Image (cartoon, rainbow, N blue to C red; front, side, top):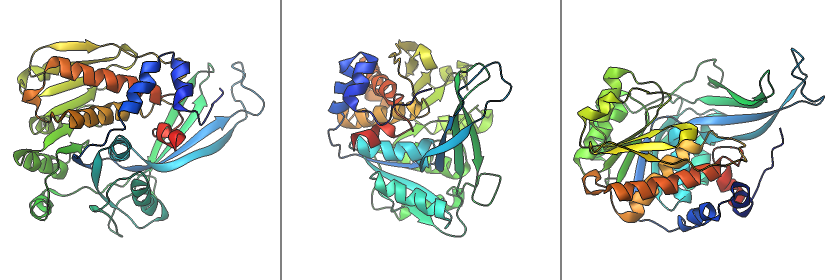
Length: 340
């Protein structure tokens, strides 16, 4: 498997065969005055490319290989969104509590490097840091796959530190602004309570569940949110959507594209944007969320009740185009690195 990295936006547009994708990305450089606060899953992504010095033979049970580390930087869903939005012109305020290990300090430094405001990020001995090791490799049939393993510094198990529910009142009281958008991707009580409180004070709440829904916690998060984006592979049964006619639901369906349901008006399909030069698909969903939020900020349409189906469709089509472009780069944020 040959990885061409880095490449330019122009190169990718030619690979995909659609110049409008590149032009849509350029248009997103407009600066927004909106502020997005986010908490949930942050990790230090450690990405390896598995190389096969003797070539790859599907007839062999084991092909000699060498794992080459190519990227080590902040990642995971919330971590990526907090870094992608500044690239799209939107100010971000991540909420994170990491330990004082080299890796924990690097997560904080990387958030700053990508343009996030780290006023609500701290490192202390009581914090938690997760390491996400990802290996690009070939399966027994010679097809590109990825393996993942979550650990922590000096531990086999990931360590996450979230804002606690009883900390939320004091946290909000100390704020000197209310964010325009609040993003969260975990079902823990603290982030969920913060969503409820900020929504009551006027913020648009965007929830992206991290995996399969745990019915009680998941639905409690849905109840306090305005926009809920989830993977159809993780949550195939969408019947619950009918119980919430005041929200926007976005369901991603991989190569089949996306669909959305605005305020109980039924599901509408968004066609996929093909890309025949796929290098790394891990960040596509995070780009979809980031572009969607950035476009709503540009439109100044942060009230689901005021959105039209046509506006949602256009924004999601732009998000799909940029997400498709992103998979031609190694790393969730490789598109940003290639532009720098």
